[in-house]
Length: 208
Ligand code: GRF
Image (cartoon, rainbow, N blue to C red; front, side, top):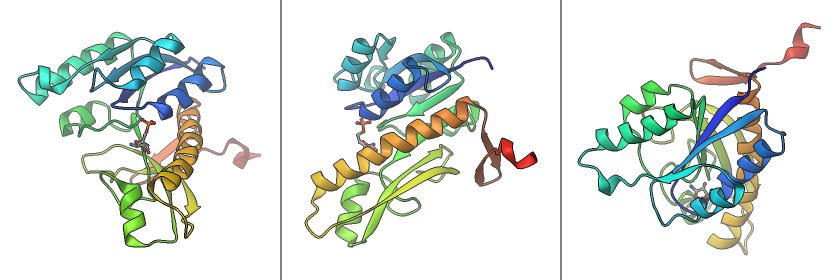
């Protein structure tokens, strides 16, 4: 099977990007790295990309007259490397319906809560403030809503009485890396089946 090209949208630390990129580079994920596009030139994710030898570029919204122009620049670079899958890994911008339509079911996002609980920013703090006993993380395809796309994978963790935002975020981040790697791997092996709102893993053994 031809290797898919996986590109990344990042804004900050980039640990999710690195977790997936390392599995692509060591062959665990049947893919080639495309480009890392950061919405901030300060993002540590750009350092990580350099160290991994993966092409990267900062495309900052503030340098464009309109969102349309900003996204057109991103699309240009994504198409230049023939991107098959976009991984939004700690990407803090909202993509337009036009962009999402262009890459329908080809953008995977990682979110640090069990969606549909606690969408949007600071999901870990939302969970702590609400007092839930179980939270976790979710991978999903990005659609026109905020964290409302079809869910691919989830992992749950318990919130312990002594947890604070740092200990909880660290626990969730470990699970984020795991489910993002597995979600990207399944996509690159053409094993994800999407039926309206639901995503299933194609089970090749079913027919035996
Ligand atoms: C993660 O919790 C991610 O879900 C959130 O930002 C945190 C850092 O992600 N969006 P990363 O290290 O930049 O991948």
